[in-house]
Length: 434
Ligand code: NAP
Image 1 (tube, protein in one colour):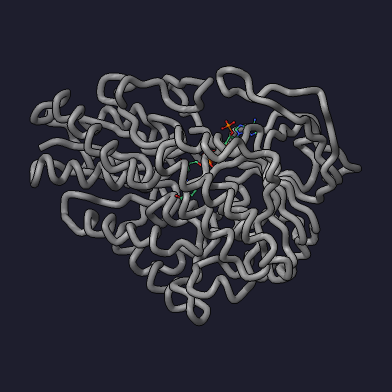
Image 2 (cartoon, rainbow, N blue to C red; image 1 turned 180 degrees about the vertical axis):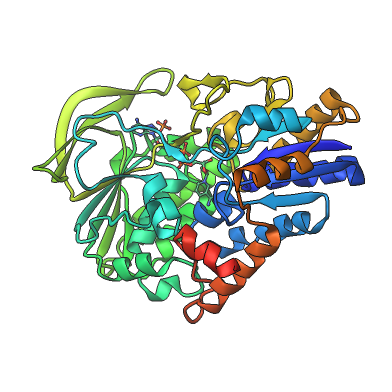
């Protein structure tokens, strides 16, 4: 019997568990450990609440959990309730699938002012992550600066711009919906330090901006390269840039929509200013060098805004004793191997890139590596040993069956038309399973 512990119950964790089931059949026991009492990580608290079709992949993860050889072990903090070293003693392989939940730091003056928020916090707030339920973003802001030109920036702007009716069918949490209903936002500005050909926004997500009830995307013709230059782009990127170009055309038809979503390209934030809270962003114009990197031109201007949300990527939190690559914000690894018996997968391995689906080949690859390394297993104690430790320490893990009770309670308390109203408090989650 092979014993595998996976830390993190998001897509990378579940695809790895599925791969282990497929590779080893009944000859493996997998424990998926999570700090929260609820599974699915990024699917639950990262993917936007109005993208329910993406969230539906959790049904596939649920199937993985229905087999006897995969167990969800929730409400257990690795590093507090059990250490990585202890897990390594008990399991043939320990896989860190901890994602990249920390914001890459916006390292400019004034980033500690009230009203400056990282995307992890803002996304966590509207998705009901217990860590961010009390965020209280300044939704009376009339002008919001969103730093970054990636899909997270798009999610954030879209959520800020939607009307209550546009959230029908979503699982946005009640506190966020109530807050957003009071929103005074009139202008959302994307600050992209490079140009339209360098965006990291995918076509489907970008296209949604032109469908919003009360908001219209605004682009500046002068920012675009010649149309013929689009020919060198790969097809997905060309589609995205075509959406951007089309925003120029739909602009006239959409004049009646009161919220502007402005694309400010070649714009690098250099400081945030205000008396205790954000009042303006100082921006420097950029141009591209020969390697398509952004370089400041020295020309500066101010953008009045009362909230700044930085969406500039994420980092994996280090774990004591586990080699870490600080520059890239992920575990030091070679193809997922960190140390003998210790692996990483997903964003913890490669950094925060790709779609949910990218984690599938990643999960299958790490199980291939583990199969090569551990053979038929070394007769380790596995989950029986973990249970013994928990009994000694009084750690009460949440099981998948418990989660199904929590889920039932979340479905029962949903507002009309919504699939669930998430508990945002860990104590409420635990109470719902009892
Ligand atoms: P991302 O795609 O890496 O985009 C980060 C953006 O921040 C880039 O435009 C980058 O510009 C900019 N940036 C980085 N450092 C900066 C700085 N110091 N100052 C100004 N701008 C800076 O990251 P993300 O948006 O967080 O998304 C993470 C991953 O999740 C991506 O793979 C994304 O596609 C995926 N995701 C997918 C969906 C979806 O499919 N619906 C939704 C959300 C997220 P440069 O290019 O110049 O570095």
